Image 1 (cartoon, helix red, strand yellow):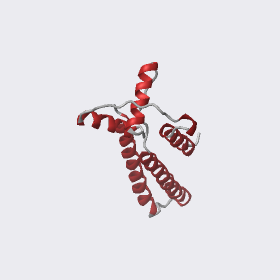
Image 2 (tube, one colour; image 1 turned 180 degrees about the vertical axis):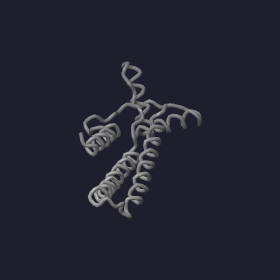
Image 3 (cartoon, rainbow, N blue to C red; image 1 turned 135 degrees about the vertical axis):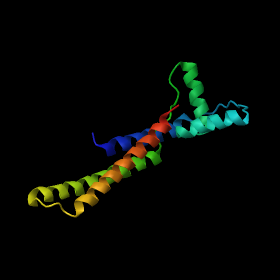
Image 4 (cartoon, rainbow, N blue to C red; image 1 turned 90 degrees about the vertical axis):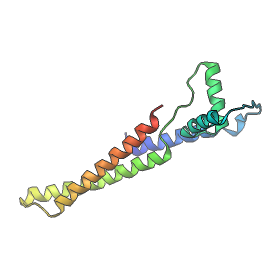
Length: 141
């Protein structure tokens, strides 16, 4: 499966969780009173799943009442964008490295651009590692 397709699918999933269809408007209200620490905790978790505080509280309350799973953090749009950028960068430098190695094989002479291609590849791999670490940290409870 193409990575771009799975990223687009994840973005659509996030958008579905953050918007309710017009024909399913909620008309009933429950008011909560929270101290600053409780509100901060709820706000942080709701934001991490791309929901409003009230929407997240509603979903969690319904999940508890029905015995289903509450909304969980997913990869943010920013992280998805960084992953896509890193993927494109890695493809670009891999192509440059491949061309430099092909030139080496055909001529037997190390092309000047080989060292640059190796350095670019190392930098791109570090970028992918950094993005993976960021995503990993965002998924920790």
